[in-house]
Length: 148
Image (tube, rainbow, N blue to C red; front, top):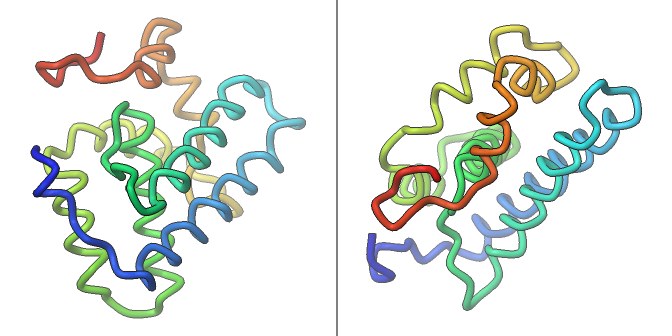
């Protein structure tokens, strides 16, 4: 994807996504101390923070890791719920920033044993991954879009 394909997000959409990143990161941080996977959750919260920072003007908002793809998907879903209606900018951002759906198996893993208080169960995701797989979701994509 070239830089010209990165959507120009409106200030409203950027604000919704930034709020979603902050909210979701705080929810993850709130569960860290009671979790059997605090280090994994720390990295997930950090992923939301990175994505929020990438929404700043001049930064490329495209996800660079499977974890960023997953978290961006969750941010868009949260922003859609918060907005109360379909937002054309969010739909366009989703299609442009997450075109290949490679993150959807990760999405399914955290929804299989979903806890009602969380929009997504990151501990279930961590439990379902091998140690190598856990590391891979935080690794940047290779130039050929394959995970290292």
